[in-house]
Structures are given as structure tokens and as C-alpha cells.
Image (cartoon, helix red, strand yellow):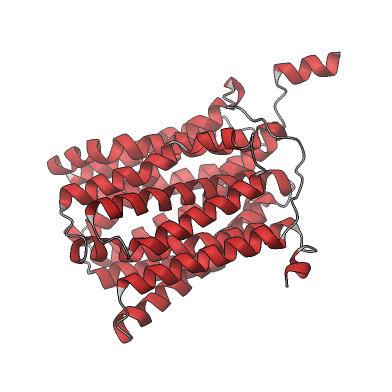
Length: 394
């Protein structure tokens, strides 16, 4: 098997990485609230602290580039998957406040660095023509794996009544095993250019940075408050929310590759424009919705729009210097998580005044994103950086 993997193209590596992450992360996320309350005695303050700690590695994702001075990106990707799997596998064995804090940070560190390396490797190893489609297929693979995990969790918990400790162990070890297969089975693929081993922030990428920041802000409103609205206002149960996750995952398996092909056909500017117009309508509807069924439909549509983030990554693939891909992937994750640190608390205060205002803030973010998207060229070309221009003249 390992010998056959060595003959596979690099996108197979990316698909296996896309499958390895949700084996652990979907397990961890699905069980977290019940495990934290039933086994570790968590209250609201402790779960809030844990969620804040979970976001710290995402905010510090730019640190991945400094590790590339000592190891290759595929090696760092494998080590990150191992940290994700080990952190998940240990969770059930440490049912205390500090134990859950420790395993969460370890799991999150692996998760965010694995995602950073996957994005960087995608930009380096896949051509700009095929990149939207390959990114769409990665989303589909991740969604399919997540569906498999959720279905298996239902069997293990509801039908077979397996203890949390063994479920966490199986989910984590599955990622560890796949990480070892990836590390042993694939050669080290070489990208278009040697990557910078230092942090890169360029004025020429400012539009990409701004759109990335706004995407992170929008994501926090969905992740933190859309689900909360479903439970608080419409009385959705945990089973109902799980059913929505299953619907979202199933739709992503079918739709994400099609969105990738649509990005290639229509171009990044048109797809970003379509995404942000849709988000304006969705967030405004969230603010005034009174029907539980319409709220569920909005929740599903909102989730599907995440797949359109392919257009933003494809845009950077076309404008960026190939040597900047690894550093910029880390910087983008950090910028994306700035909102994760500040927004939940601030918008939580606003929620106490009026939930509608929280979603109208989401509409305002989408309007600003739409205006910025009009600055994306219809046919993006690689930006000529000053040092590269100087080299070409010499």
C-alpha cells in the first residue's frame, strides 16, 4: 500500500489530510459539551475559558512559518496531525478542568497548524487552473468524513452505550494512524518555489488580508450566534442541531466540488460578489426571522456559503509570489482568528440588548466585504513585488 501511495499525485495527499482532520475534530466537537458537564463538572465560566483557549493556537498560526526553518512542510503537517490525534485520544483519560484545558490546547494546536499546512501545500502543489476544483473536493472529503464520524458516534452512544473515554481514543488514534500513513507513504513533493522561513506581510496583499479578516468576523457570528439563536428562540434540541449538521455535510459533499468548478468558470470577483450579496440577505433575514423552519433553511444556506471561501484562496493563488504561500497561509489564519478573540464577547453584550442587532452587524460586515470585493480584478495576475522587479532588472 505504501509503495502505491508513493506513485500517487499530490492531490491524494491533500485529500487524505482533509479526511484525517475531522476524524478527531468532529469527535471532539460532538462530545465536548456533554463530556465537559457530565465528566469534568464544567460551568459557563469554564466552558467559555476553554473556548477562548481553543482559539489561541489559531491566532498564533503564523508561528508555523518559523518551524519551517527546521523541517519540511509535509513533516510539519504530519506532526500537526499527530498532535491533533493525540490531544483527542487523551481527552477521555483526563476528565478534569485542567486536563480538558491541556488536551484542548494540544488538539487545537494540531488542528490549526494542520489546516495551515494543508492550505499552504494546496497553493504550492496544485496549479491555479485546478486549484478551485481541488479545494472543493477537499471540502467534500472532509464533509463525508464528518458524516461518517457523526453516524458512528450515534451508534456508539445511542445504541451501544460506549463510554466517552473509548470514543475519544478511537477518534484520536484514527487520525494518528492516517498521519503515519501520510508520513511514510508519500515522497516530499516540491512546490513551485522555496518557501520563506520568516514572517511575510506585504502591502500588496492588503486586499486579501482585509477580506480574510472580514471572513473570520462573519464566521464567528455564524458559529457562536446562529446556533444559539436556533436553541434560544426556536427551542431546537441537540438532536435537531445534529440533524442540521448532517444536512450541511451531505450538501457539501455534492455542492463543494461544483462551487470549485464555478469559481474557475466565473472568476473570483463574481463568486465573491455572489457570496457577499447572499450573506447580506441571510444575516438580515436572521435578524427578523420568526419561523423555525425558515431559520433552519437560513442555517443551512449560511453554512453552504462557507464553501465559497474557495474563491478567496484561489484569488491569492493567482496574485501571490509562490515563495510567500507558506508564510501567508499562517498569517491568514491569524488574521482570520483576530475576530475570534474579540467579537464573541462584544457581540454577546449586544445580544443582551437585542439579538437582531448582532445579525445586522453581520449584514454590515457582508456589505463591507461586497464593497472590497469590487476591487478584486476580473482577471487576477501575479503581483510584481519590488524585490522581484529589482532582480529581473539586474
